[in-house]
Length: 162
Image (cartoon, rainbow, N blue to C red; front, side, top):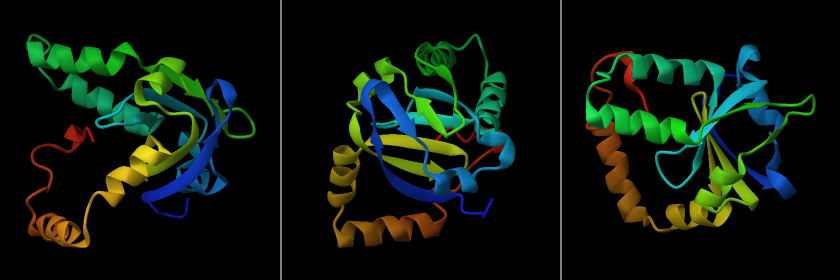
């Protein structure tokens, strides 16, 4: 692993949802997280592809929540309803679930965003439109907010659900 936790890649998704994970992305992942993944709904307009380690952290986070709370049940059920276990083949190809691809309009050209063990899979146009909608002035404001500590994690470590 080269140590980059955050990167993005442009890829093409073949017919029937087959996607070859870029070699550079695979190299960024720990050895034990290169072959099996979990696909779920994203927390935005994308599919979330979790490495085994990241998915275990998410599971631990779910374990920490009150199962009797209706919001917790709703969150859990939405996350799990369309989740799918995916194994990469020997050429680092995976097949994305059709229902998730349809839900987010992902086919053909896509963008993968590596986010510390989680991989967002975006429709390329949606990703570019989102990024292009932010002016340099808006980005300067966002940058100032990020560095002010306003968005720092609160509470225990397992609660990262981005």
